[in-house]
Length: 130
Image (cartoon, rainbow, N blue to C red; front, side, top):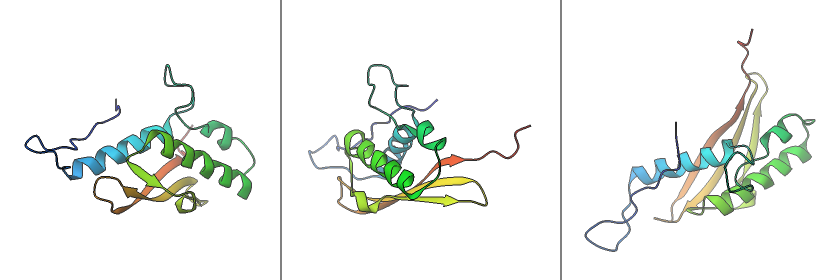
């Protein structure tokens, strides 16, 4: 079971920020957990998570994808503050052959102010269901 990970962001010998690959891994893990949790699953915070089941079972359209991108932007802005994301940098990509839905976005890392690209798989259709 995975949980929210807090990276070592400060060096014990000084007050300077400590940059590491662990920070990037923790940020990606927190982003995946935030976007893969259904709203209402986390006890005591009814706003944490994505309403993905609502979007999953509605008619596929450009408006629906745009609304999903707005919801992803809101969740990232509130619950993943270590990455600054602009709304225009979020892209919902659908692979019809594999039945997979991806979310691609660029975010500015608040530790070293570098732009990181995130490619997250939101949904994958399982064709092996019997």
